[in-house]
Length: 228
Image (cartoon, rainbow, N blue to C red; front, top):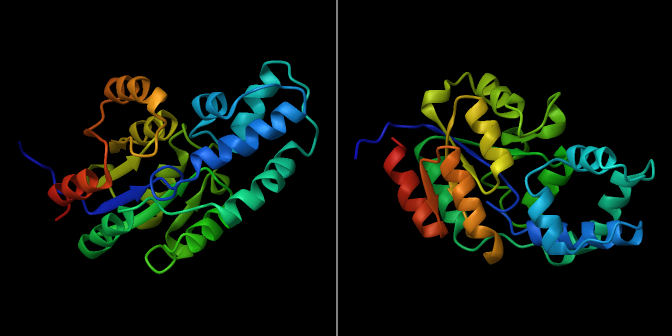
């Protein structure tokens, strides 16, 4: 197999670098159920994984659910304790980031608010490898993932071409954003709930994933083939 050399890796954060998707799903399910929208953490993760808080809010409003004006601040408040006490890096991924920083450029593209993104990377011990200037938020652009705006903004900031760039994603929403920006992507499943994996594999295949991987070790090996 012939590999095209890449020298910019754009990592998603939640579910790729840090083990946060399940925590977010727990806190969101708790809040929505309290507000009269009964939903389980598993359903929350399946429906909203990879989407921004604004997009999640709009999806619920489009269904006719009457949300309070401070819904998003309430989300942050409910999740705050969980993220401060239970948030962890995904084991083995720090080695992947070190490989990428040693062989090229790196960035983080997350739909989370910028301050939350930076705080969560600091909490999980990535801040030495991924300082704030390498972190980009969905709030930095008009349209967060799955639109291409965030990835296109990173390409602009790095003065980089899509062909020399690769995105690492765990959600179809993020993968759609990468593909819409003309960037190839690697899909990872190591933080995806078991009951969702088969569906994710099919979605990633349909989106043209370069690889669909189960472990950080596979990610390190695969990225190593593409990085110059």
